[in-house]
Image (cartoon, rainbow, N blue to C red):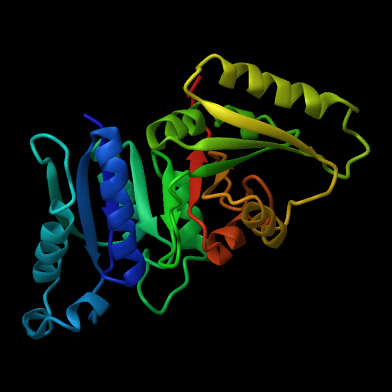
Length: 282
């Protein structure tokens, strides 16, 4: 059975991640596991402010039971395979290990919910999680709005990695009933052969046409939208719900994925970002 893993640190972002995970688990008919990694920090959850019993308890087990009960109310998968797990240690390593042991299909995490309230999801933590997770990672911000008719932005450039994630993105689109906005992005590089990008986009289109349940539209852009700000701006202009990014598996911790500013996009985006590892999805 497919499984979704939701790491939480009791922030508003992580609670939002649980809500989205429940919706996707219902669509996937997947089991759902909420996990928390103890780091020695004290927590003051927003959801506990109106519940004196939770504030007085001040225990992660109490908070986890509360979140589990809250999630169970809207979780509609037969046999109700929903639970929680508490681990101790390095946050990113424990998330990765739990996902590996559970054969997790997807990790859904709040944008600011990996290392605590005061820390942004940046630098080595963000890179290590998306680079070493054994499955796709969907990040969500507490202000994210999931539209009734979702649209997924899939950017294709001259690199092979942007095409290797297409099967997974297509599968996710089918599950949530989303339309794919396929965008060919030209780059200012004199070494690129004219017309080659059109060929790559055509290859993706042929793949998507094999499944009549997948709805897509394709666009070729002459302007450069490789910066995080421009990607986010373009996504919002076109009513995109999810932005997709590939991550290349590498032993080099300094190797960038998709573009040198991808980590920044994860931080500034108030749209959910689906980060897909470069694996053998074909």
